Length: 239
Image (tube, helix red, strand yellow):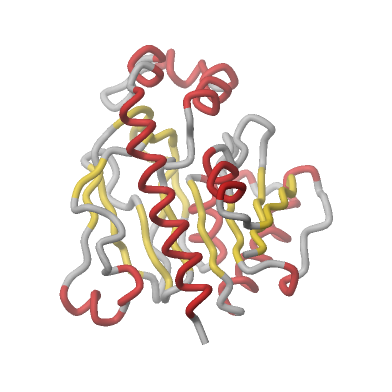
């Protein structure tokens, strides 16, 4: 597959996504959208993965409009689109949903619940094949939240934040949390955004709690690899 990464800050790169792409022979190109770089054409990639960042969609930076145009085009063209944290919020906003400050930050390892109703499983067979377990623990780092866009289906929630993920058709998934962080990526984000940790909160863990949970990093990356492998398999078997 030809995979394009849209990155927003130097310290939030593809991390374990790059590991998976290299191990499986996929082409990976990174574009720093926030630097005003020329974005790729819709015909130059099979998958678009939009990374996170500390900014808010509501900051309305000039580069965001072009990025959301590309996201909408990719969804319409049935490219595989994955949004992570800010990337998920950009997908939601590009489809007409509202992004608002959440009533509390969610930073650290916290459980989420995944599930589709029987009717949703029939409507979305690609997402109902046991891709995610009913409950798992990703790494969170967000202060904003998204509404579920029209014609999208909510699929994941947490105790702290009801809307943690949604799907659009069989090609687009938006995840409020991070499965791609390895420990080195987490260190970079902690150093860049430590003030958010120091503010504390009911759903804010310490630096030590985040970095010491080696098994959680392993489990989250394993789920990421399942998601990416399902994408690649779907791509290879599609008509």
